[in-house]
Image 1 (cartoon, rainbow, N blue to C red):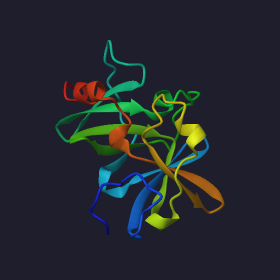
Image 2: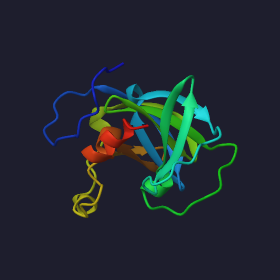
Image 3: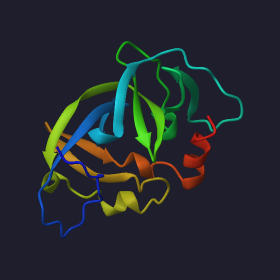
Image 4: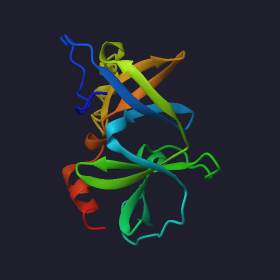
Length: 166
C-alpha cells in the first residue's frame, strides 16, 4: 500500500505506483479519494446546525468526544439537494490535519489502481478556474469515469483555518 499523498499526475510520470481509493457516489457520479485520507465511514447521525456558517457546512457532530464539522458535498459542488436515505454516509477525512466529515450519497468500494491508469482531467474543465484544482485525474472504472479528488485542495486556506474553530 502506498503511503504517499496523491499527487497531480504529470505527463512525464515514470513510476507506476499502486494507489488505493475509496469510491463514493454523489448525484449519480462516482468520485474517489485516497484511502489514507479516510479515517472512517459512518451512518448519518443527528447533525447540530450552526449559525452563520457557509452554505455547504451542514453543521457539527460529536464523534467519540471530538467535535467534527460536516460538509454537504452536494452543496459544495452546487448540485441539486436530495433527501438522505439508508445509503447516505459521512466520510470522516483528514483535511490538512483536521478531521472533517463529508456527506455523500453512498460509499461504493475501495479500488486499487496503478497511477499510470489515471488520466489528467481535460484542460477545458480545469480552465473554468473556480474550485476545480482539487480534481487530480480521471479513471475509467467499469465503463464509468471515476473523478479523483485531492481533498486537501478542496478548500481555500481561509476555509481550512475556519475548520479549526469548531
